[in-house]
Amino acid sequence: MPATASLPARRLSVAPMLDWTDRHYRYLARQISRHAWLYTEMIHAGAIIHGDAERFLGKDEGENPVSLQLGGSHPADLARAAKKAAQYGYDEINLNCGCPSPRVQKGAFGACLMNEVGLVADCLNAMQDAAPDCAVTIKHRIGIDRQTDYHTVRDFVGTLAGQTACRTYIVHARNAWLEGLSPKENRDVPPLKYDYVYRLKQDFPELEIIINGGIKTNAEIAEHLRHVDGVMIGREAYHNPMLMQAWDRLFYGERLPETDFDTLIPALYRYMQRMLAADPGLSVRHMLRHYLGLLHGRPNARLWRQMLSDAKLLQSNRPELILETWAKVSAAPEA
Ligand SMILES: Cc1cc2nc3c(=O)[nH]c(=O)nc-3n(C[C@H](O)[C@H](O)[C@H](O)COP(=O)(O)O)c2cc1C
Image (cartoon, rainbow, N blue to C red; front, top):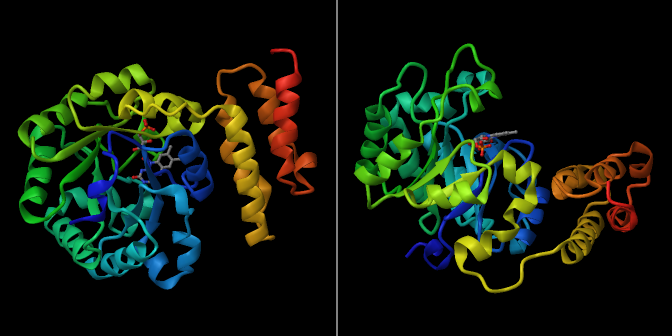
């Protein structure tokens, strides 16, 4: 029985985002939602095998349910990385088949793997064999370049469902254009086709189908959940983390009180203190940069961001800065 059997459903999840969803961001996200699934940044299998595994895989004990997203296309390497991830307590290992960046294309993984479904099946099977207690999942697009018909993604998912044990498909509902668009443009320019993802759920009702791309509000989430099993949110959960404040209540039936700022800010302070005690070389700025969006759309959000990114205030590398800033923001007239 996979370890994930007793974990909450992937009704809501926060997308893997390079440079953004590191352990410090994930700690914040976990304080706000107890149930949403969290994803690491994409980490190349080779970095885990040959590099500093603790740096890439280290995570907080209370972080689960959490998924490690791997990049790569060599089944043996992905298997070794998956095995290490299982030892670190990840609940899920996700294969990236959606990243269009030129660097990733050069390494022949990411979105271009959508053209090599046999290899993807080998990768998923190798990962699952190496980490039998983890769920192995995939995140992909609806097609690449000119493959704009629904049958591209239907055949991709259908083949993998037939040849692997993968039951969870996270679908960024737009194509990846491998030439002519930057990774950033590839998150905005190709049109969103949510109906393709809804059709996947109709065609493969036994699979867990999760929709991603351009979703920003809890009302939009609720609408998508009428058609698919789960919703993955990327940029909005990063720039506006308090979006997650109502998730447990709205989407998981949680009755415990929602996390408020008076609980959250001291928790972040204690977390930063703990991180610094473990690694005195760590910079407070490195952690605080993920907390700049916390007051998004609220009074004094600008003062909050200004103080927490002020080079002079950051110089002394004191975690107390977050408490002092919160005190200032709370006392300031609303602006
Ligand atoms: C800064 C940034 C980094 C990203 N890095 C990854 C990544 O490492 N792996 C991945 O599968 N997708 C990555 N993505 C794509 C997101 O996971 C997501 O699919 C995309 O942003 C669309 O969702 P959204 O509209 O809710 O942001 C990244 C997106 C952003 C903004």
